Length: 318
Image (tube, rainbow, N blue to C red; front, side):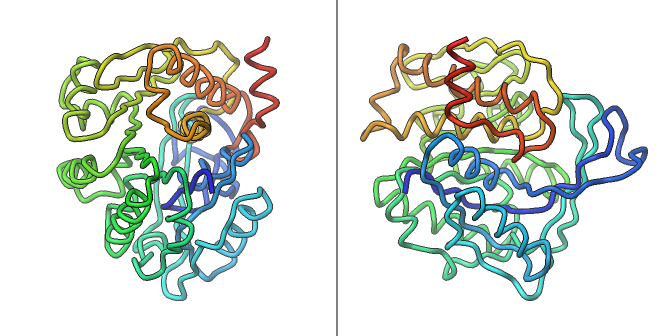
C-alpha cells in the first residue's frame, strides 16, 4: 500500500448557495466527507494505492460512505461499523468561496469510537505512508487507536503525516487541542497546518519561527497552506515558498486535503522520502501539491472536484 489514512469519514451537508451564513442557508445537500477520507480518495485519483481506516455508524449514511470509498478505488478493509453511535455529520456554510463555516453533530460520533483492537495491522505494516488528523485525538478510544496506528506504521518504516486540521467546535477548549497536538508531534515526520493552526501550534506570528518551533518537537518537515497566497515549507536545513496558481475559485472546501494527497503521492514515490528534502525536489513536490489543490478549488464539492493525475499533468504543462 502507498498511503493509508486514518480518522473521520462523515457526511458533509453542503449549502445550496454560497454567500450566506449557517442560519441563512436555504437547504443543505449531503456529500461524503472527512479530511482523511478525502485525502485517500484524492491519492487514488492521483494513481496511488490508498486505504482508509476509521469507523462509521451502522446506519444508511455509514454504509453509503463505505460504498463511495470503495467505488472510488479506496481499500476499505479498515472501515468498521458502530451499532451504538451514528455517523458524524458536518453542516457547512460558505460565507464566500474561500471561507467555510462549520457546525458538527458528533455526541458522540461513530468516528470517535474506533478502538485499537479494531485496527487492520496488515494495512499499517505494509503502507509507505500513514496520514492522520487531529480530530481522532479529540476523544477516546479513537485517540488510543490513532497512537497505536502511528506506532505500528512507524515501526514498519512508514512516513507519518499529520494534518492539524483544527476544528474548535470539536474540542473542549483550544488549550486541550494544543495539548493533544503537541503530544503527537514527536511521533510524526510531516506536519501540515494552515495559517491559523501555525499560530496555534507554533506560537509565533512569524512563519519561519513558528515552523521552526514545530520542528523542534521532532518532525522533519512542516508545510503551511496559505490559500490564495500560496504555500510554505520548512525542513531542518532550509525553507521555501510556492506561489499559488491563479484559478477561478468555486469552492475551497477540501483543497487542503487534496494538497496533502498531492504531497504524499510525490513523497512516497522514491524508496526513501527523505531523499526529496532538498530545495530542488521540494520546489517540484510543493508545486505539484499546489496544482492538485488549485484544480479542486475550481469545482463544487470535495470528492467530485478531486483531479486525476492526467488532469494535474495537463494543468502543470499548460
